[in-house]
Image 1: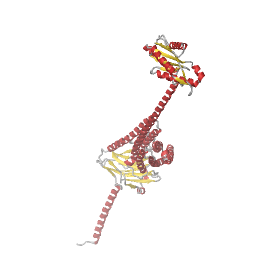
Image 2 (image 1 turned 180 degrees about the vertical axis):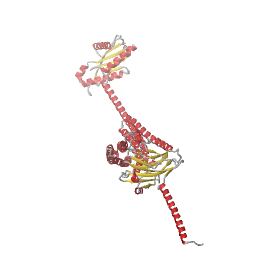
Image 3 (image 1 turned 30 degrees about the vertical axis):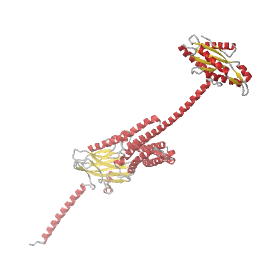
Image 4 (image 1 turned 60 degrees about the horizontal axis):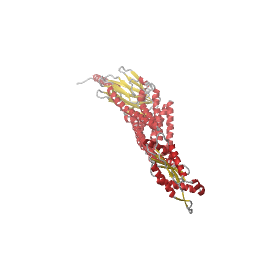
Length: 610
């Protein structure tokens, strides 16, 4: 069978045309498929899953001059500059450029399930979200802490927006992010139920932290009011500034304290951080006595306090970028410096520094993790994001224990000093009382004879008179006078006269033995004896013993001289006290009988019966 050449050529041309059409058709279909599918894997939402990360599904672009518009970003040349983010988070530190993000979402979940897009970092100033709706038009949404808090679609500390993607639909997203804080990109898609469950646990976590911090501040406020130690007051301010820093860092301060002040929401972070450094450094100086235990570091801490104070001023003047970078760097320096100071003070004998070493080791680790994540050197995750809060909580508790321990030790030392002082005071009081008693005895006794003087005798006479008035018992007195004492003084001298008086006093004290009986010297050569509850016979008997004792005593004038006899004349008087009588009558009666004894030749005793 043969074919003609034209027919063969026609057949070949027909086959080629059909093949070209098929190839063209396959190329067209492939192009449509490529055009409809994203180059980067999409986040595919499903019913059986509640949370999705962006690891490996998010690209970003640095807009160094912040000059790219949304239309510019969609240009093919710009699209080629987007870089894939392999991790779930992007930490770029304190950078000026604007960041563009790009991702896509395919919703294969049931229509009943609602989805939320979270920007889990509350310090981003501007967030502009561009999303293509089902009609193919791009829509725009603004978020960020540069807006008043109530303008957020979800009134929450972090930035939350709803994803409105119909079932089995694919949607592209572009996000422009700009901030003066650290550039931390933490995106997450969750279901509404998962979001509220997640935030409930987060809020409980922060509630416990804030509650303990507040409790520590109030507890130490009461201690300060009790002991008036300024270290407690500085500690309270450090707790409050540290708590404010954590609240500002997590967005709670903006949400609850100043929701209508977006500018101050940014300022509060370097301000509270710098105040924290000032108060913790000051507390360290006071509590550890660094000038005594670490004098060189004392001046270094003073320099740190000065720099932190400058950071406070920069914050208040609105120099946020300068203040936040300075405060962040000073936080690391503060931690290292105080930790080193604590160790040196401990080694130099400050026992309370051991609490500082433990407290600042824990807090230092937390701050280091946070700062390193803020500069982009560590991944920003739950641990690094909350490390400062957890470290601060542990530090606050341990420093409170340090204050309590110091108070306990100082109280014990004070009690010991007080006891020692009390012992010394008791000893001095005892010595003073003995001295006072000695002075009293001297004021109530005769310095020559040692007998009570007239003052003492009169006091005891009044007491005994009242006592015997109640008891209706007799009271007797003996009035004794040395016979011719003036002649003795003039003839032999005063020294011999004094010797005579001392000898007579000794004899009287040997005779008068009852505790209630009071012998006394009431004048130059006069003696008197008070005899409570003694009748006339008893008083007369005692008087005669005294008279005989004096008469029998030979008093030598000088070592080689002869002995002379010295005698007494004694008048005895007895009365039973009653309301119609007084002590003057008793004295008058005794003087009368003494005069009778003198008139009867001296060296005698005259008594009366009444």
